[in-house]
Amino acid sequence: MSAAIAVHIMDSPFTAKLGTNYCPTAQEAIEIQAFLAQPLRQMKCLDSKIAELQHALNKLLEEREGLGSIVQSHEALLSPIRRMPSDIMQEIFMACMPTDRNCVMDASEAPLLLGRICSAWRALSLATPRLWASLHIVDRGEPPQQVESQSDSDIEYVHWPIAPQEPRAARYQTNYEFGDGG
Image 1 (tube, one colour):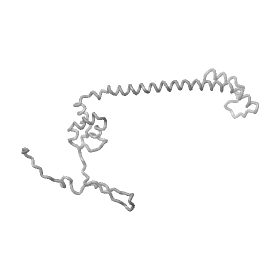
Image 2: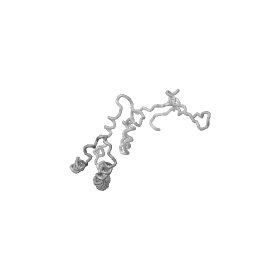
Image 3: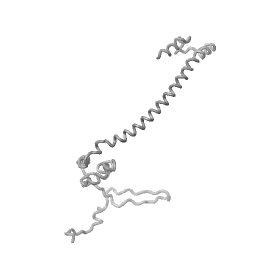
Image 4: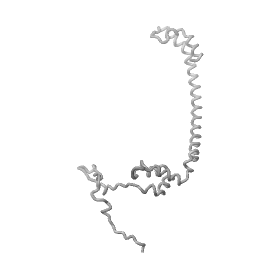
């Protein structure tokens, strides 16, 4: 508590009754209101000063935020990962691949996840055949068909079969001749 506030409390004829359940008389209520006139004026003055300082602080914070945005975007250009050689990045990408199984076509897992970071990483991941060499693609057969229910607005979808009846490779077998190209 500041010294100025302590003086005001000491000047009050009701200091002993503060913080109690005392109920002032009508005359005492008038005296309390008269006593509060000066502190209320001081509070109004302080509120005005606080508002001015808050306005100045808000302007400074806004200016700082603008500068921070500029600094942050320029510092991003200095990021060491941007200067990393491609061959090292490719090795890092390979280290992200699962070692206990083939990778799957899942956007939350390498190699697809690596291509979602930025355009440079997408280009690098697509240009790295080793990332795609062990990709496991699940063949679920033919796409599901739409089935209309009783009302025209209700359309249900049949779920993909868990295991296709016949492997797609068997359905589309073709005979290729591999020779000397002639």
